[in-house]
Length: 205
Image (cartoon, rainbow, N blue to C red; front, side, top):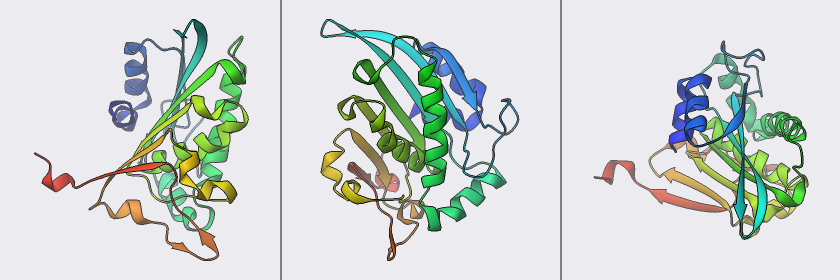
């Protein structure tokens, strides 16, 4: 949640938080002004970081990917486009960017890589699509997705069975209308996967 909030401020603030968490090789892309690749339609801001850990006697390459929510006109167009593509284009663009980043990490392969993915709103929907598409490059048991206020997004085939995505967690304020769009109607059945954690913000102390 802290990471997701900080990339909304700027890429530099998000990068600073990742450094505090021990990540290095940090890259940011597609923010409005602060990165070489500028924000565009279906190209929300994203920040990647990397570090090594040891777990159960085995070394792992941990990659953190944080996706920014709606803050620009191009982001709003991406949101409007979602009623047709369910954020799939944004997710596909971002997973290609993530794959390129992973290819630059020596020794990182499917079996020894852990992905931690997070985002808020537009960034949340994008993060979930990226999480699913990343299963081609990382073992699904090593992909962890934590999102906040996610709209519905594109679904297909096995994805409709949320039980196969036990490491996907979406935190939702039940009074937030953004989490109910785009509509889940034929011919495009947009939905969410994984486990939803519902709360009422106005009732929290």
